[in-house]
Image 1: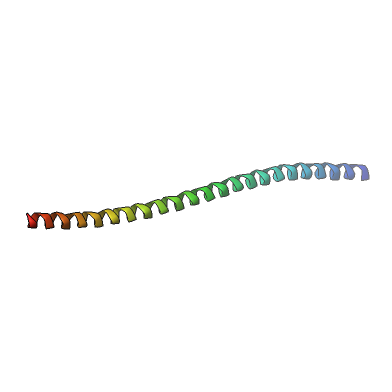
Image 2: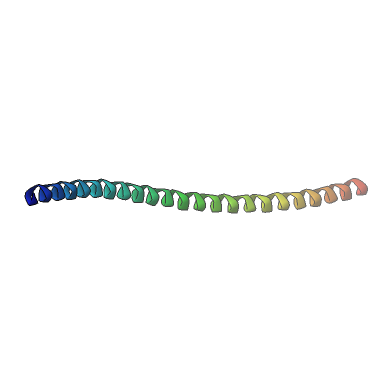
Length: 83
């Protein structure tokens, strides 16, 4: 009868609405997790860039120390020859 069909339709609609609400909550949780992951990725990228700059600075200092060592060695040879 029409009343039974209407109740079935209403029950189905209520179940679908409940499922949609649950699905919406899951999508929101995934969006939040994605935003956190994106933020973490951005922070890690910044840390990697900082580390790379630090590595480049360190390599520059090591090269300068090598040049200084060469200069000191030449100076020491000069005094050794001169003595």
